[in-house]
Image 1 (cartoon, rainbow, N blue to C red):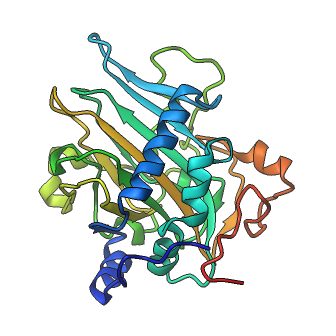
Image 2 (image 1 turned 60 degrees about the vertical axis):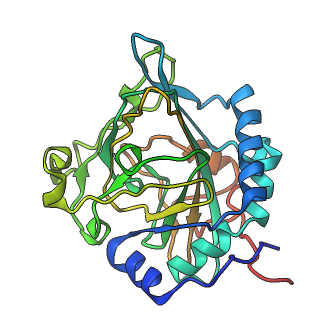
Length: 287
């Protein structure tokens, strides 16, 4: 059974998430959950999955490391997924009766890294679609607002299909078989130059301490920031969650990471409700 939230979500937090597509929640995860996630990250970094890659490597050797879908091989992650308050948090904000786990992703930046996350939405890269999806973004070290992930409030409510960034191009080590994203056939507009005028777009980010989290809808535009001081690194553990309206969708273009083959191996097809041991429903109360 999942652990209870340390407090109830307020009406203002629920309304903010629905309106803006993002909300920062302080102190949701206590030291035991932070220690568990941190221990899992150390295990994970010692044995990354085949999907792992460096997104950036500068002349001084500073890197931005990314990996995903590791939870079934990292027992600390699996315990966090099944037992922490994250599932209750996601279900509450999504106003979903049931919640399924999608996947984890980690982002580890060396101290002083200057890599900025390209602006993008998550859902166009995913093998699912639906409005009731979210990410719980959880820093394991302190992060300042100017260095944290940033968001365009309300952009999850739009219907424009943007020309998404090709994250497969971020491969300085030349790792073979990296997924490439081509949205040119379906894109209706370029993502605007948000970084040039963040005030115009109402961009938000927050100072955060370990235990705080940002929860955001997978359709919101996010990116920017990420440039770290020389004495600060950034370690972020994220979990992705699926609510009641979500269905499997294998896209003809753009999936990165492309999980369609592993999902098919579990018997999932486009149009299916998420299910199987790959995308487990997390019970929110005792049976």
